[in-house]
Length: 365
Image (cartoon, rainbow, N blue to C red):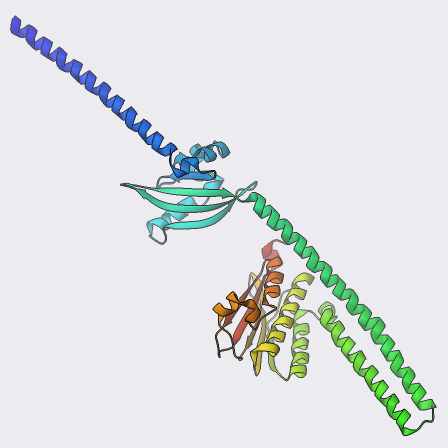
């Protein structure tokens, strides 16, 4: 009987110890969890004023810092379906292929734009995705406003060029033509010695030269052929005239180009003007190849010379010493229309300048 009581007491004590052990394990787990939370509170993600999001390798959200929680309360539930995580699974797949250890991208979610850095991160044996997101909506709106204003400035400049071109061609040109005719009539009516006739000949010749220069200036400000003949024939005529004036051998080639907007036509014409002027002033070239072509998404204009070329690194660091003083203006014009400028050059190997402009149907304008 005593042995049975001792066994029951022993079993009861063991059960009490098991319960106590379980209670202690719970306390330890809570302590460790609290320690992890305290450590998290002290970390950079928790204190970061920008959004910090963590997911597992399946794209399920495992952590949101306070800023992310406040900004997107539904993010934890939506996970990879949320607009701010658009394309995340594709990035994770690229991480699995070991292509890169981070990706920088920009996400437009409709009412806001975020710059993101998506990182493949390890913490001990745990591997996860960490996303830093910075709201750049205000900056993008400011940039859009600046770009809109710059477009208006360029458009106003072109309108003013067009007005001056018309006035030079119609008023100054006609006035000089009338002056020449009047001088020729006077010359035919008066009887004067050879010295007077010679002076009249010089004045008439000067009127001719001035009229021609004004016409050239008017065409340079705004070639009327752009409105009547189109871009390709206007560029070809400019190449022919420029070659005659500079003695450069310029070969022009064009494939069928789509109908472009007035702004695009003017932009490409100005690019050719600046590129050929740079070649004549700085390249020391004998031959130049100009090509206009298009593909499904963009129209392209290239100018290639066989001149002295230049070192790209030096040119970028010291633009005032490079042969392309107008390249910055060309790039800005193209970027205002959603395009870009490529420059390839090496000393003694010539220079290639290529302008790209997206077709309007593609660019959404």
